[in-house]
Amino acid sequence: KQEVTQIPAALSVPEGENLVLNCSFTDSAIYNLQWFRQDPGKGLTSLLLIQSSQREQTSGRLNASLDKSSGRSTLYIAASQPGDSATYLCALRDDKIIFGKGTRLHILP
Amino acid sequence: GAVVSQHPSWVICKSGTSVKIECRSLDFQATTMFWYRQFPKQSLMLMATSNEGSKATYEQGVEKDKFLINHASLTLSTLTVTSAHPEDSSFYICSAGGLRGKANYGYTFGSGTRLTVV
Image 1 (cartoon, rainbow over the protein chains, first blue to last red):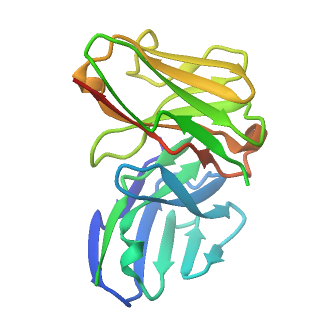
Image 2: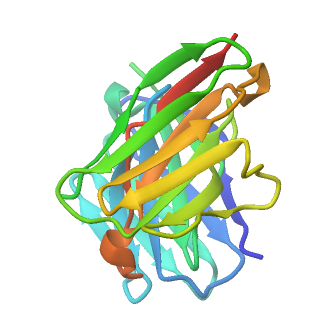
Protein backbone atom coordinates (compact mmCIF):
# COMPACT_ATOMS: atom_id res chain seq x y z
CA LYS A 1 0.00 0.00 0.00
CA GLN A 2 1.37 3.38 -1.01
CA GLU A 3 2.22 5.70 1.85
CA VAL A 4 3.19 9.33 1.48
CA THR A 5 5.10 11.14 4.21
CA GLN A 6 5.94 14.81 4.40
CA ILE A 7 8.61 16.16 6.68
CA PRO A 8 8.62 18.49 8.48
CA ALA A 9 4.99 18.85 9.51
CA ALA A 10 5.55 22.53 10.19
CA LEU A 11 8.29 24.99 9.37
CA SER A 12 8.95 28.64 10.20
CA VAL A 13 11.71 30.54 8.44
CA PRO A 14 12.64 34.21 8.10
CA GLU A 15 11.73 35.99 4.91
CA GLY A 16 14.29 35.73 2.17
CA GLU A 17 15.64 32.31 3.06
CA ASN A 18 15.71 29.40 0.68
CA LEU A 19 13.98 26.28 1.94
CA VAL A 20 13.29 22.67 1.06
CA LEU A 21 10.17 20.65 1.73
CA ASN A 22 10.39 16.88 1.61
CA CYS A 23 8.03 14.18 0.43
CA SER A 24 8.75 10.46 0.57
CA PHE A 25 6.77 7.53 -0.74
CA THR A 26 6.96 3.78 -0.38
CA ASP A 27 6.06 2.50 -3.85
CA SER A 28 7.97 3.85 -6.83
CA ALA A 29 5.36 2.67 -9.34
CA ILE A 30 3.74 6.05 -9.84
CA TYR A 31 2.44 7.90 -12.87
CA ASN A 32 3.24 11.36 -11.62
CA LEU A 33 3.75 13.50 -8.56
CA GLN A 34 2.17 16.86 -7.90
CA TRP A 35 2.88 19.61 -5.40
CA PHE A 36 -0.04 21.71 -4.22
CA ARG A 37 -0.49 24.73 -2.06
CA GLN A 38 -3.46 25.09 0.27
CA ASP A 39 -4.34 28.29 2.08
CA PRO A 40 -6.44 28.02 5.27
CA GLY A 41 -10.02 27.07 4.47
CA LYS A 42 -9.32 27.10 0.76
CA GLY A 43 -9.01 24.58 -2.01
CA LEU A 44 -5.86 23.38 -3.66
CA THR A 45 -3.64 25.25 -6.06
CA SER A 46 -1.43 23.11 -8.25
CA LEU A 47 2.18 24.27 -8.18
CA LEU A 48 4.19 21.73 -10.13
CA LEU A 49 3.52 18.41 -11.82
CA ILE A 50 6.34 15.95 -12.44
CA GLN A 51 5.75 13.01 -14.73
CA SER A 52 7.27 9.70 -13.71
CA SER A 53 9.83 9.99 -16.52
CA GLN A 54 10.98 13.43 -15.39
CA ARG A 55 13.41 14.39 -12.67
CA GLU A 56 12.44 17.98 -12.00
CA GLN A 57 10.16 20.85 -12.87
CA THR A 58 10.62 24.57 -12.30
CA SER A 59 8.20 27.44 -12.06
CA GLY A 60 9.45 30.82 -10.96
CA ARG A 61 10.96 30.50 -7.49
CA LEU A 62 9.81 26.91 -7.17
CA ASN A 63 11.71 23.81 -8.16
CA ALA A 64 10.48 20.28 -7.60
CA SER A 65 12.56 17.17 -8.00
CA LEU A 66 11.64 13.52 -8.23
CA ASP A 67 13.80 10.50 -7.47
CA LYS A 68 11.68 7.40 -7.86
CA SER A 69 14.47 5.01 -6.98
CA SER A 70 14.79 6.49 -3.52
CA GLY A 71 11.10 7.31 -3.20
CA ARG A 72 11.64 11.00 -2.64
CA SER A 73 10.59 14.36 -3.94
CA THR A 74 11.62 17.81 -2.79
CA LEU A 75 10.08 21.22 -3.28
CA TYR A 76 12.64 24.00 -3.23
CA ILE A 77 11.42 27.54 -2.60
CA ALA A 78 13.92 30.29 -3.30
CA ALA A 79 13.92 33.69 -1.63
CA SER A 80 10.86 32.97 0.50
CA GLN A 81 8.21 35.65 0.97
CA PRO A 82 5.43 36.08 3.56
CA GLY A 83 2.92 35.29 0.82
CA ASP A 84 4.42 31.81 0.57
CA SER A 85 2.92 30.98 3.96
CA ALA A 86 0.52 28.09 3.40
CA THR A 87 0.31 24.32 3.66
CA TYR A 88 2.15 22.47 0.95
CA LEU A 89 0.93 19.04 -0.08
CA CYS A 90 2.53 16.45 -2.27
CA ALA A 91 0.35 13.92 -4.03
CA LEU A 92 1.13 10.80 -5.99
CA ARG A 93 -0.87 9.29 -8.81
CA ASP A 94 -0.90 5.55 -9.16
CA ASP A 95 -4.38 4.06 -9.53
CA LYS A 96 -5.63 6.91 -7.39
CA ILE A 97 -4.20 10.12 -6.08
CA ILE A 98 -2.74 9.87 -2.60
CA PHE A 99 -1.85 12.89 -0.50
CA GLY A 100 0.70 13.45 2.19
CA LYS A 101 -0.41 15.28 5.34
CA GLY A 102 1.33 18.43 4.27
CA THR A 103 3.91 20.84 5.61
CA ARG A 104 2.60 24.03 7.22
CA LEU A 105 4.98 26.76 6.17
CA HIS A 106 5.17 30.12 7.93
CA ILE A 107 7.43 32.81 6.53
CA LEU A 108 8.35 35.37 9.15
CA PRO A 109 8.38 38.99 7.91
CA GLY B 1 -6.39 25.51 -18.44
CA ALA B 2 -8.97 23.13 -17.05
CA VAL B 3 -11.31 24.62 -14.47
CA VAL B 4 -13.55 22.91 -11.96
CA SER B 5 -16.22 25.00 -10.28
CA GLN B 6 -17.44 23.83 -6.88
CA HIS B 7 -20.49 25.21 -5.05
CA PRO B 8 -21.29 26.19 -2.43
CA SER B 9 -17.99 27.34 -0.96
CA TRP B 10 -19.43 27.08 2.52
CA VAL B 11 -22.66 25.89 4.06
CA ILE B 12 -24.11 25.65 7.54
CA CYS B 13 -26.96 23.22 8.06
CA LYS B 14 -28.96 21.77 10.90
CA SER B 15 -28.36 18.26 12.08
CA GLY B 16 -30.60 15.80 10.24
CA THR B 17 -30.88 17.77 7.03
CA SER B 18 -29.26 17.01 3.68
CA VAL B 19 -26.73 19.10 1.80
CA LYS B 20 -25.82 18.92 -1.87
CA ILE B 21 -22.43 19.96 -3.20
CA GLU B 22 -21.91 20.46 -6.92
CA CYS B 23 -18.81 20.25 -9.04
CA ARG B 24 -18.78 21.31 -12.66
CA SER B 25 -16.00 21.06 -15.18
CA LEU B 26 -16.26 24.31 -17.08
CA ASP B 27 -14.12 23.84 -20.14
CA PHE B 28 -13.56 20.14 -20.48
CA GLN B 29 -15.37 16.87 -20.10
CA ALA B 30 -14.48 14.94 -17.00
CA THR B 31 -15.24 11.27 -17.27
CA THR B 32 -14.04 10.75 -13.71
CA MET B 33 -14.64 12.81 -10.59
CA PHE B 34 -13.00 12.20 -7.24
CA TRP B 35 -14.45 13.37 -3.94
CA TYR B 36 -12.22 14.09 -0.96
CA ARG B 37 -12.79 15.03 2.65
CA GLN B 38 -10.36 16.86 4.88
CA PHE B 39 -10.70 17.16 8.64
CA PRO B 40 -8.73 19.89 10.44
CA LYS B 41 -4.99 19.29 10.39
CA GLN B 42 -5.50 16.03 8.50
CA SER B 43 -4.59 15.10 4.97
CA LEU B 44 -7.08 14.87 2.18
CA MET B 45 -8.80 11.50 2.17
CA LEU B 46 -10.42 10.02 -0.89
CA MET B 47 -14.08 9.25 -0.28
CA ALA B 48 -15.25 7.96 -3.63
CA THR B 49 -14.60 7.87 -7.34
CA SER B 50 -17.41 8.50 -9.77
CA ASN B 51 -17.43 7.73 -13.45
CA GLU B 52 -19.95 9.33 -15.74
CA GLY B 53 -23.00 7.18 -16.16
CA SER B 54 -22.10 4.54 -13.61
CA LYS B 55 -22.27 4.01 -9.87
CA ALA B 56 -19.60 5.54 -7.70
CA THR B 57 -16.92 3.44 -6.07
CA TYR B 58 -16.58 4.19 -2.37
CA GLU B 59 -13.49 3.85 -0.24
CA GLN B 60 -13.54 1.57 2.74
CA GLY B 61 -15.28 3.14 5.69
CA VAL B 62 -17.30 5.63 3.64
CA GLU B 63 -21.05 5.04 3.84
CA LYS B 64 -22.49 5.07 0.35
CA ASP B 65 -26.04 5.58 1.64
CA LYS B 66 -24.95 8.64 3.55
CA PHE B 67 -22.77 10.23 0.89
CA LEU B 68 -24.72 10.02 -2.34
CA ILE B 69 -22.76 10.72 -5.47
CA ASN B 70 -24.30 11.39 -8.83
CA HIS B 71 -22.31 11.82 -12.01
CA ALA B 72 -24.99 11.97 -14.64
CA SER B 73 -23.11 14.03 -17.20
CA LEU B 74 -19.56 14.66 -18.31
CA THR B 75 -19.56 18.10 -16.74
CA LEU B 76 -21.43 17.68 -13.45
CA SER B 77 -20.97 15.56 -10.37
CA THR B 78 -22.81 16.04 -7.08
CA LEU B 79 -22.20 14.87 -3.54
CA THR B 80 -25.18 14.82 -1.20
CA VAL B 81 -24.58 14.44 2.50
CA THR B 82 -27.78 12.92 3.81
CA SER B 83 -29.03 13.29 7.37
CA ALA B 84 -25.96 15.29 8.24
CA HIS B 85 -24.53 15.18 11.75
CA PRO B 86 -21.92 17.37 13.44
CA GLU B 87 -19.24 14.74 12.82
CA ASP B 88 -19.79 15.25 9.08
CA SER B 89 -18.52 18.79 9.43
CA SER B 90 -15.49 18.91 7.20
CA PHE B 91 -13.95 20.38 4.09
CA TYR B 92 -15.07 18.58 0.94
CA ILE B 93 -13.16 18.91 -2.33
CA CYS B 94 -13.86 17.45 -5.74
CA SER B 95 -11.34 16.74 -8.42
CA ALA B 96 -11.68 15.97 -12.09
CA GLY B 97 -9.46 13.07 -13.01
CA GLY B 98 -6.80 13.87 -15.55
CA LEU B 99 -8.73 15.01 -18.57
CA ARG B 100 -10.50 11.88 -19.67
CA GLY B 101 -8.56 9.81 -17.23
CA LYS B 102 -5.19 9.85 -18.92
CA ALA B 103 -2.62 8.85 -16.39
CA ASN B 104 -0.07 11.37 -17.53
CA TYR B 105 -2.15 14.40 -16.60
CA GLY B 106 -2.42 15.99 -13.23
CA TYR B 107 -5.65 16.74 -11.45
CA THR B 108 -7.87 19.80 -11.42
CA PHE B 109 -9.50 20.56 -8.09
CA GLY B 110 -12.56 22.48 -7.12
CA SER B 111 -12.21 25.27 -4.59
CA GLY B 112 -13.74 23.18 -1.81
CA THR B 113 -16.84 23.35 0.37
CA ARG B 114 -16.69 23.99 4.10
CA LEU B 115 -19.61 22.14 5.68
CA THR B 116 -20.62 22.91 9.24
CA VAL B 117 -23.42 20.90 10.79
CA VAL B 118 -24.95 22.43 13.90
